[in-house]
Figure 1 (tube, rainbow, N blue to C red):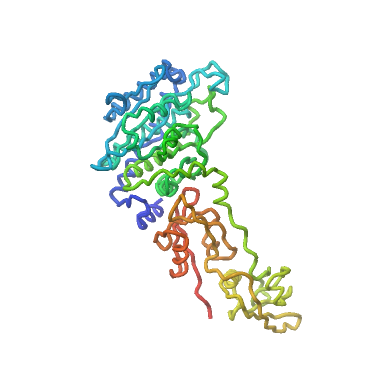
Figure 2: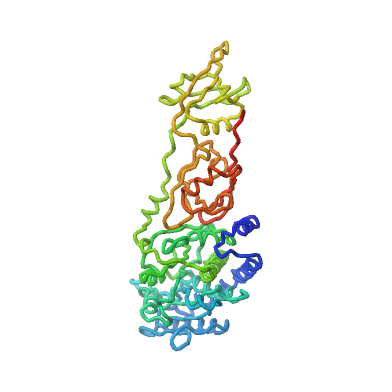
Length: 506
């Protein structure tokens, strides 16, 4: 973790340009989110006494009162009707809303909505349960877990020395299980000007994390959101799956339908989903802690950064199929030379074991059992170096082999296929993530392969410098001295790699 934090500070890639004191405050605030407190909220909300928290029911109203008391104890302002904490609608339904005013005189007019639905399906019916019906469906994961995460995020925000620049509306939605009606009602009857809502974060089912994995939805709704979440992920170091699917399956969609950027955190469905067996003892409290700490970091960063950008309407057509096409690896390049070899102790160089048909090696007259001792004016001493020499070489190369029982020396000329490459990587730009490229190919034996780069990695900075477009990146690759430091993101985890490019040998 220390290495990762040092990297972030050195590059100031954390978009708020976080300085040491503020970073320490963020860590202290995030540490206030604990597994035991999260479990405590889930234990209460998923208790049988709440009767499954169905909207408008006795248990649902009791859950709303629990949330009211939690917000009052924390000293938040009411964000509901008539400056209270409730927004009533429908048949006894109530959204529960708390307001934290921002610290910037101008930006505090903008609102970041951070919410989760607190209702569930009561005793379950054929319409909303997978059965058995008629038993209390406690909904520990769905969505007592997300509700607990929001309460702990409130605590973490209050633990900061000052609120973020923008204001935050903490929302506990009712009626989600009846068709998102609580969040839909709010956007149609907002308790603050809807035009001032700059961003939304929704948390739905974060209680069953496995293998430190978290799904992130909505990252295409504004430019650079994948990078934002990944850079904040330094503390939790979760494996993030950025899913481009946009469905009306949770409350964030009520805002996306009004062109407001939104993210959703989710740990996946499971066999207890919408069944009576979704009980409190089955949640992964440590996983909830990790997800909630990331939630806090993202919420605070979104509320505190100077510019959030606007809604990307093209996100609606960027389906998982489009995602797959964008991230599709390029096919491997044909070999420049076309040989396989042995490296033995019987003599210098490399003993040729196979010559591929139709390749440069065959055209040059290279034979099996030839011993390649010089290539492009250099003695062949090391197979890794030889691979790189083949990649770096210009098209026309002279080489020396010894062959036959008499080890006769033969000089051969070879015209290599393809173009020389300095790094051995290819990439593709992503319009939704400016200043980022996706690695789509890594050539075997190249510095990129040696550095541990993988297809699918995203490059964010080169030589501690950001870049704008792929051409800018290429210019940095061709001008910066070796070693070249890359800041990369792999499945939501930030790290750095060093590309060692050997100088030409005499």
